[in-house]
Length: 315
Image 1 (cartoon, rainbow, N blue to C red):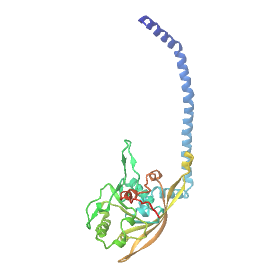
Image 2: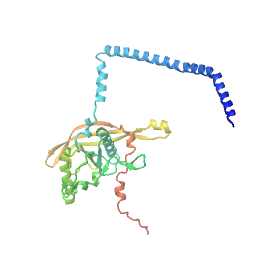
Image 3: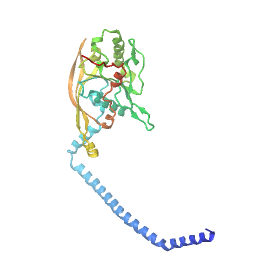
């Protein structure tokens, strides 16, 4: 194609644009009016409605005195409520007792997540209480640090300090850690005694809470007398209606935990008693995080043991 053909083609395009330019502009203007006019009407109506609400709302507030104080009181109670007002967040050591399936571990996992969101710090746990999360690059990570008691307590003394990024220590299933029948063994006392000392100085070490989870109603008397709270949870589950709407599948989720809490009062040199009984409900406000709870959190510990080989039984 030579230059003369290019010039002719260009000339045709320009003529077409000149011919229909006015029509295109008129269509564009009409289109903008059709779109913008309803938006303008809607915007004006919305401003008018908001102004009306403002006037009538002010009128309602003034004319409902003193009854509007009921609503104000309820709102303030809800908005100003802190999680550290709940019994399980009172600074100190707590004992969580219940039979298998009662919700001990699920409640404490929710509690350490709850506390982490409030303080920005995580927890030390003696078992893998969470399923690992995955970064965008595919690497896995945990929020909470698994530890062995011997990492901190050995030969009757505390040998390590706590990382300032962690402010809770969780002993998962005390039945597998300590039993008061062993309190005459040196290995037992070498860990228990410095741990109790650590509980007594926990705030100096940046630790707010100790949680002891157990299927036994009591443990070493020295531990029990150091407690500030004793709690018996009962898990409450409900039908996940929203999940059914989305997927058509039936699923039950944790709604929360009904908890019976006591304060621990020393009643003698070798005894204590539970006082100030309180029943309350701890709502599951982080259901998405509960998806990361490891229901078999002690499985790794037992999988690490030498496996007993089965033998063929014969008559």
